[in-house]
Image 1: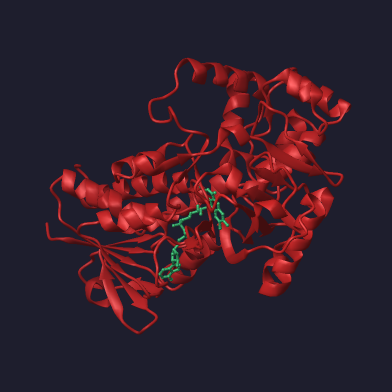
Image 2 (image 1 turned 30 degrees about the horizontal axis):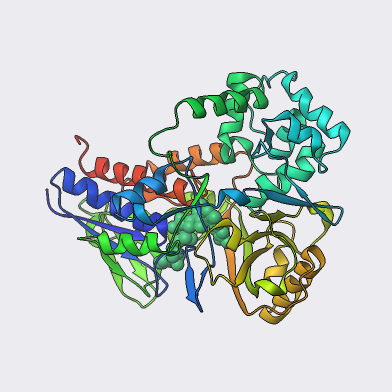
Length: 481
Ligand SMILES: Cc1cc2nc3c(=O)[nH]c(=O)nc-3n(C[C@H](O)[C@H](O)[C@H](O)COP(=O)(O)OP(=O)(O)OC[C@H]3O[C@@H](n4cnc5c(N)ncnc54)[C@H](O)[C@@H]3O)c2cc1C
């Protein structure tokens, strides 16, 4: 069989990890693949963007990945950068929640939103007495009978009560995704919660059992790592090292795909070969295409080839956010910052969603005499704020830090990054929409979708999905493998 021409559109972590897995599989099976990555920007990495300035390492997009899904960890090790993996500083492992204008510590032992220890909950100033009682009742609430998808709000209210929804689940759990908990699918975004209820009849019981199991047998992959991990030199070391490791893949930057059509020369021969039309007027033939682009962008690329697939892709909503990083001299900040940062529930009506005390969460993020803080703007409830001009947004963020943390000083460094439509939302019915999409795609063999819009929102999820996608591409060409 002749050499197969695979084009990956999008050079974010999903596109790069797909190329990496394809090369790995081709080598293992003695196959020859010709892989090209098309990236519209002049750099790869997509949302992973690290800047280094005046001794600071500033993450514009993601600042870490989770170790529970071990795929990012495993990839770092395979790439030879395992020694650069950096744990969080566990002496500061506390999160605060802004409530009625004050920062309250999230009770110790609350994992995601599920309590696993009684005493810290009883002592907590965040949860009301009634809220604590309602939380405890979770142990007695029977599991849901129907398999129907439900929103995160419905799920949390049903199991743990409204206090937990308002003060923990909405700012912490939905906040990670900048999402609206009323429309967020619990089944697609947090399948583990659904599984825990199903298996144990109670989230608290499940979490306690899980904790015990983890203590008894910490898996080899995650042993020695913290829940959130990053790379000592900055997260962009991951995409940069993938690029260095690619042997046969050709990466073309500053090349934007605008449309995908059937290659005219091949229509008569019946071969499923595609042509990618580029913004500069050129075209590229492909035997298979992996779309590692945001789903709305893939919809645009496929609009002429298959309007149904394109419309289905357009059903996946996205949210815009911005991050503003500010560095201060240590002696200019009196706040103790004794944690990883804080989240802001919606009823507080503030203009930032959350702030990470970066210098506490990770070491090596800046000079010893300074603090780096990163604030999140936008998200579902305040999306318009990301369209403010730079000066106004920075002024607004400084004002928020003054109100919440009492910081009056001028920062010594400020960096702002806007992320327009960068966070996909798995809303109710997401799984069903994917099933329909996959059925439609099966009629177009040679087209593959990967990325955060489908089966895993974070970096680790994207890396796993990229690997599964590479597997599907190989099986498409070599069914016997
Ligand atoms: C502010 C922010 C904070 C986050 N924090 C975390 C975190 O802490 N931990 C975590 O695990 N995840 C986090 N995420 C999510 C994580 O960044 C994403 O899941 C992941 O980076 C998505 O990678 P991707 O390759 O699928 O998409 P992207 O990174 O969006 O890459 C898509 C690429 O396709 C290119 N492209 C688009 N259209 C075209 C075209 N027509 N032709 C050619 N190229 C095109 C783009 O330029 C881009 O490079 C965060 C995301 C954001 C925005």
